[in-house]
Length: 79
Image 1: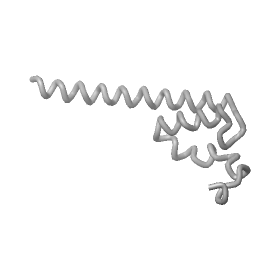
Image 2 (image 1 turned 60 degrees about the vertical axis):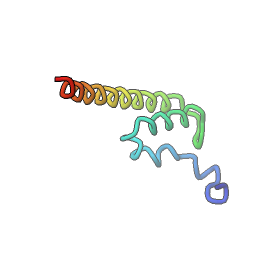
Image 3 (image 1 turned 135 degrees about the vertical axis):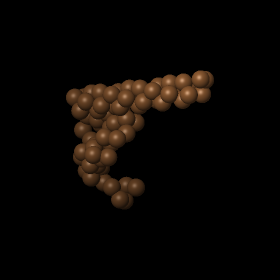
């Protein structure tokens, strides 16, 4: 891998994957961790917090969708 990517090539990696991460709370969390710990980029606590907030919103939305689906399924099953 080091032959393919020099450390300088990874400096802006969160910006490169940002559009794809918008649909995945897990990816958003991963980007937050990368920013927080300086993995592939300079450490940036502010960006990390923004990614963590987006991830949390995504996880909460997914949980709400699952709860809604389960309530519909359970109400149909037990009528």
